[in-house]
Length: 548
Ligand code: F6P
Image (cartoon, rainbow, N blue to C red; front, side):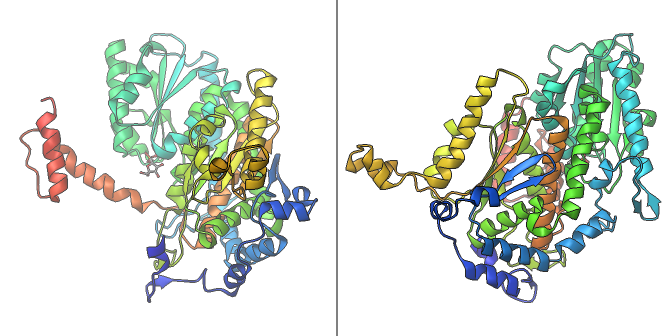
């Protein structure tokens, strides 16, 4: 972090931190503690509670005062955020390094909507694919689309990676309570154990593979799909079975055809949908197969409600922008390097992993849109685990560790499954954690409990650790859509304020290229061109042990 903030010179972009709005923010410094803020303002909880669609968002346990909020809003307003947001919603090519529009918001526009991109209304295209998905989902769920030997489909195996896996995998887990279709399994890792585990116990005659890859060139996905095809063909004993048991989701019809999947069995999407923003596209097909087209529509409607909110609500009430600004406040002014996302819902256990890609692949950049190095830090490390598991693992560090780690808690009034008294216990833990982080326990309070002096410091909770609470009635398809859209727009707003292109991912390319080079070198007898001495030694170590 220091290294970057010390950057100087012509090739460095300092627009954000050299503005008068930024200087005003810095002058405000750290506010009084949360204890003090709550003690002096009995109305604080109400004043800092915001609504976004069906979500209630309590910001009161953050390092916020009205002055800080005003200064942050001025930073957002001066950053060009609203112009960039308007440009995104208008279909302009804001992904400048790839010369593409960024239009995941078009995926959830109602049928009657319209959005012209490069001279073409994309809404009819979106609904054509949604209709194709619905028809297929109905056919599979109702037993009209059968396996090659006439059996109905009982299991769907989604093969994809990154955005072609994390979205549907996370959403399937989240909406398990609503799943009344085939069971879904997800394969992403090129580690053969992943597909072996997914295929264990399955009958090829009743298994459908959904191969998801925007590019259809991703080595992990193509390797897993090939292994799956071999398993299917050898299990059924007829190559022609592939037609009944494989569908693809991609933008690359030629590569789908070359793989051996009839492009008739392909569900398309468009280059203006980024992988990590694609769960509302045909990439969500497995989810639709599991929960049905109607619930998938509710899921999309949830996204759309938040999209409208993000576009229309003024900055000082706009929850996505406020969450983005808080992240910037903690990261760029107070040095936070990570944020924890802590869903108090076991069904949201994959949400932190999903958000890691959404946030870190979008805003993990050190170069601004103008190609200059940034003088400020950008996206944080995002991590988390569902409550209460995290409490018994890493919350010690959250409460008494030495890092500033803003926390985002997510909780629900009603359980999706299981008895209400479990939910009561879960939610009491959620509220208690946020309370403990904010207010801690002073040395006097600890001493008053009779704790001996030599233990006092160990048992003090410093408090003043900021957190945000996101609440909703239940984890329904609609609410899940709202939550994801909210996080998408937080990431967008932060990227816009930091001045980065949140929609490319050049940083993943070098490792892919080097792996492609190393793969043939691992085989005994192959020549190993000069890498560095460490990589050469690692390759030699592997070759010496690799079973031939
Ligand atoms: O390597 C990163 C990445 O390009 C992600 O952005 C994307 O979600 C993932 O790979 C999978 O890509 P594809 O859908 O083209 O297989």
